[in-house]
Length: 366
Image (cartoon, rainbow, N blue to C red; front, side):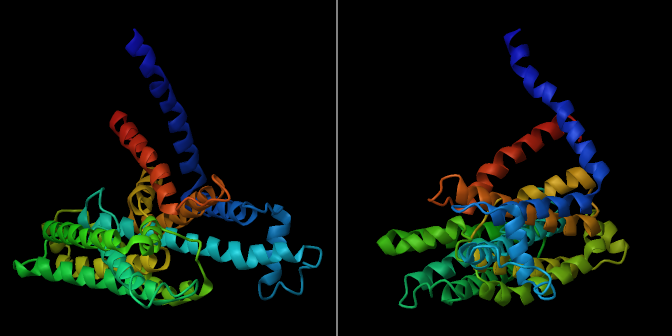
């Protein structure tokens, strides 16, 4: 009887979960995702060490937009609030949205290519290669380059990109480039690069602190300059993957069936992985290693709105943006004035939720 009573809360919680899912499906993917993103962005602009009223924050942002400056009077707002919103919070919110969208988008594409629900954007060693590149620059005389665009993001981008190239080359050395071979090569090289990074950190002493910040992910040095530098890679990579939405749907079939439908499986897989890896390397270069976004968010989108990649990819991007903006707000307010790295918050928030999804899907396909 005690065991039965202990299980009752988990069982009785399922109807509520079903009700929430039915409501989300009835609203529709795009309106709900966009609404959630808008809500989290507003909260992020208003919350912090200096709380700012919603109306004031929106007025300040609108007054800075071309075409609205003449229509919005921001003179009643304190200059300190304007500087906080425009120079500190707005770049951070935009960066969080862009990085969250990128990680979720690339995570969904990786899962589609490998037909593996545990695949994510770091599967081929992008994060490990980027971390090693950043660590080498941080301990070098070049330093971190301050708060704008310096040598660290460039080294991280190059390190992540080279790692993917090496992984693909290693997988081809055996005479093929199957999904299993790519995964094994990525895991092996990622472990090696992570070990080298750890060795560097042990010998770096106090200089290892920026490396820790990079490994845990950080948005506190977000800038328009970094976003502008990464925008072309994100736009080009995203366009390529979106153009292969139908191909990703076909790839969910058996490879032989995909070939019978006219898909060059090897070429399609290479193109999608190259574009996704380019985007993932750019995201890591801008904000460091932020985990769990590309693993959890695409599963939530599939659960709510299905597995058609023509819809899954853009919805994953919007929901991923909302997720990272929200977790970043938690990270910079829960222990204020001390800031919790956003990568830690995403793991704490995403891990239990992902386990809950696994449990409910076993109890019934939601």
